[in-house]
Length: 143
Image 1: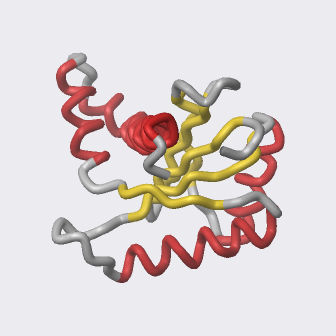
Image 2: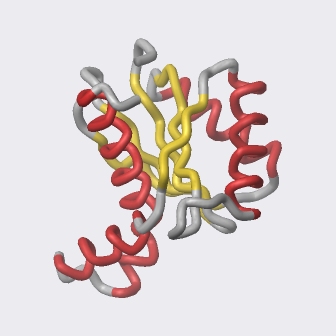
């Protein structure tokens, strides 16, 4: 694992959910939601956020179809990740994000979070699930 914290991203068309690991790389914590603007502004903001949080690596949720294949969204995610890696100089890893938004929604509904509030935090919670899955795989030696 890279030395330093990990910053996970749940890329959406309008928003990017963020989660950051603790210093030990054991737990994922919400780090907010960014309202997307245009590519260069999004990249610059994420690079600054990674610096502010002392992150050494990005983990981006990679959308896959339920049968495991990759579609157009996966391609655009990889293009975004390549640009982020090039501009930041930090490594970018990908993690299967299948059903993370669905799981985040279930968790929030189970916690009796209002529909209005869920809309504000669902992307962040999906990023937490992406990062927690990635961290668990590191601990088990799968990555």
